[in-house]
Image (cartoon, one colour):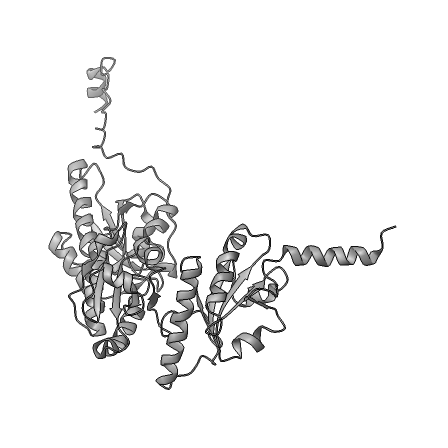
Amino acid sequence: MISLKFFGLLFVLINITSALYDSSDDVVQLSSTNFDRLVTDSDNVWIVEFFANWCGHCKSLAPDYKKAAKALKGVVKVGAVDCDEHKDLAAKYGVQGFPTIKIFTGKDSTAYQGERTAKGIAEAGLVAAKKKVKDQLDGKSSGKSSGSDKSSGGDEVVELTDSNFKKLVLDSDEPWLVAMVAPWCGHCKNLKPEYARAARELKGKFKLGQLDATVHTSTAQEFGVQGYPTIKYFPAGKKDRSSAEEYDGGRQSSGIVEWALSRFVENIPAPEVYELTSEDAAKKACENKPLCVVSILPNIYDCQADCRNGYIKMLAEQADKFKQKQWGWLWAEGGSQLAVEDALDIGGFGYPAMAAVNYKKMKYSILRGAFSKDGIYEFLRDLSFGRGNTAPVKGAQWPNINTITPWDGKDAEPIQEEDIDLSDVELDDIKDEL
């Protein structure tokens, strides 16, 4: 008979052999009981992998991770957390997939986004260690304060390396500004706070990155860096290494922001002018937009296809001019959405008419001037500067919208007049009645 002791030993052996790391590796096994003591309360820089034993990508990473740990021995600590056993740590640090790698300096952590190779991981560890030394020389905190994932220097500037440059910059669809710097460069030190301030202002529109050209020399050489700082612009959309353009703007945050926004506006498409045919159409055009520009156009019998298309084209041109405002645009035929006309008090003096609605505040402004290219432009320009009279939307909510058939782009069907047959009418009888 096989004893329970044998089963217990077998269970232990199975768990040991299935684990990705053991005591013979240079990877420290971290747990809920030792994590704070070894990592967040220590003075060491740590690279920590959050993994699961059943994860195929984790198994593929393990040899490179062990190699990186061996290379970084004595310089940067390398650890791993089995998230099947320590789910609390995975939840605490927002782990949503495996493997997830984070770099810790005290309680501050940064998500590692580079290549999953020994070289990439080791380079990232050296960059973090170098930054810690520099911060200590400058008299800055070593990361003891509570914090979450941060980019370079606690701002929105992304730290770039030879190993992550292609993935983060070239393979992204977003526009980038990349400052290639040297730590001893005085101009680079002057740029740093301005660049960080610009990154915060441009968040969501533009990515700003920084690369230490003295460490990541292959990328610096590839882009012909000969002086510091060198700033390169990478446009939105598909790009390769030939896409880089020289940045020729100012070095103050205001100049960087102005330069970047001008490129951002050039690349964003003009918003579409939607016909107001349903609730869904209204949400598609205007939900989460700062303003929604609503136009009520004449009935198709009063303004045939060429006339209506002329108005829609004019609206599209204005939408393009003000596209940086990211407003929504709608049009409806007069009389098709009476609840909207009533709520915005437009249409009562005839068509065409226009109102601009602030969805959040439920207030609107009416175009009082001519419904023309110049009249609309003046109206919208005043709104863009915060000028113009406003009134509350009736009912303080978006009115009910009828679901109607979209315009087919054609002229109105002529009204058919019925022929009246007077053959049975006796004119003498009519005369007698009169």
